Amino acid sequence: MSVKKRVLIAEDHQMLREGLKAILAGRQDLEIVGEAVDGLEAVRKVKRLRPDLLLLDLSMPRFNGLSVLLDLKSYLPEIKILVLTMHETENYVMETFEAGADGYCSKNDSRQELLVAIDSVLAGNIYLSPSIARDVLDGFLAKRKQRGTDTAWDTITQREKEILKLLAEGYTSKQIAGMLYISVKTVEKHRANIMSKLDLHNVPRLTALAIEKGLVEKKT
Image 1 (cartoon, rainbow, N blue to C red):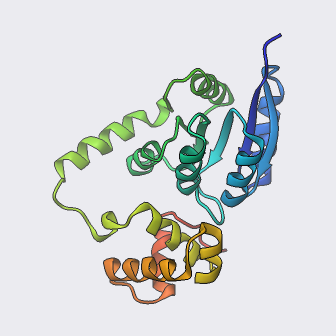
Image 2: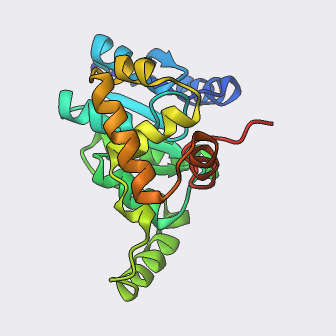
């Protein structure tokens, strides 16, 4: 009998986690070994449980999906990570693969397409949902035509986006420093760089931009 592939699910919506577990329950070759409801918990559980596959939502509290990818792929390069998301634009897809994702699956895809994605990633292939592949190609071609017209947002690094997300979620510099294992001084330097690059000099305006860019969800 073949060894089951171990899967961890990182998704902050309980209904979606339950749905994923129901889909995977029919597969005898897969075993769910853990769940995480935010990015920081996902990183900690993956490092402890060492699953073969992480099913990762991009938009989560604390660490977002891109931050999780960067952290885990440097720590456990062998892990397979399949991103599950509602974001279907070329920018999100390219940033995700650049951060180390093995696959990108739309939450609008069918249950069967999700299983195809899982099998493809576990087999060592790169997977991109057919439903968004055309949009990604169109976006990529459009961007090539617009080279040389970068905006201020394009200059923000991944680490700065990570800190911007946490600031927008209401965390203090001290709390952010503890989460990212960096000094408060470093957090403050990143914060100053963000404000300078974007010409936004207070947290409410930074929060509004973080919501606009999809780093955090707007509170209802």
